[in-house]
Amino acid sequence: MEPIKLGVSACLLGRNVRYDGGHKRDAYIVETLGNFFSFVPVCPEVEFGLPIPRESMRLVGDPEAPRLVTTRSGKDLTEGMLAFCEKRAEALTGEKLRGFIFKKDSPSSGLFRVKVYADGVPGRPGRGLFAAAVARRFPLLPLEEEGRLNDPALRENFIERVFAYARLGEFLEGDPGPGGLVEFHTAHKLLVMSHSVALYRELGALVAGAGVRGADWKAILGRYKELFMKALALQATEKKNVNVLMHIMGYFKGVLSADEKAELLEIIGQYKNRLVPLVVPLTLVKHYIRKYGEPYLAKQFYLSPHPAELMLRNRV
Image (cartoon, rainbow, N blue to C red; front, top):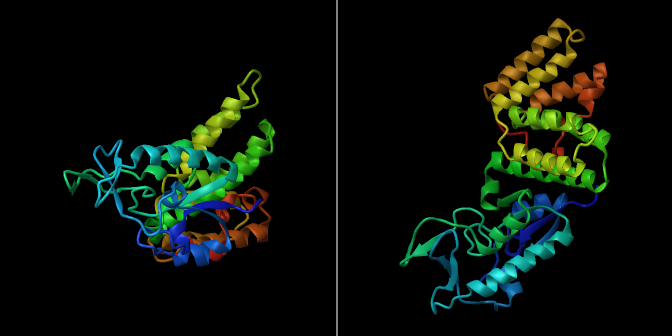
């Protein structure tokens, strides 16, 4: 695969672009994710032409269509910034981004629950102008804020989606046919199932009809991409993972010894009760795949959806 690119708010990479001339360097992004991704830094305010340092700004008015206003002088920068954000988001199409990490609480880059003021006090929250433009331009792109990456479940979900979106992008850029779609979907079946059984079934039905004469192939690929990313955006829970692990166990029916079967069931039960992390039953499953030679399972991205070095499945 090509190097996976992430858009990142420039201040999170340690660049001194904040309104006060400082930065908000995030060690996890720079020192950990930096080993696996290349970054495309963006600071909407500076790229728009505002100086460093500069007067602070905030969102005011309607949370669905907020105005961007400086806090001291009351200068309204909305129209210019909106035009810039749309132009900058469009320019990002050339970067082939596979995800974006935004700066929380920013009136330009905040993705969730950004303060929107009404009569001088915070009212219903909204979204930063640039983050909103990116979300509109790339509706399926994995998006997250740096603050939410401190939550282990949200972190794993975001990074898993980034890698899956990268694989999907590479697959689609290869001008695939129905057979290629079947192969891609087959390799991701258990991963999708761990997020949504309902969408797993809907995707399966879509793939099954891909080779029918007269099928609209372009529409099928577009719908597949939409449903695939919609499924992965849902949280994978212990209950869902246990369902997948039991499904996996069925592939070893007839080859596992009684002791091996009991050991696997015991460890799955320990994971279900949050006594061990997901990596423990998966390690045993991988051992059995190698021992008994199960080719279907060996190709499943569910077993290794992201680099083991990130240790995303090591939490209880």
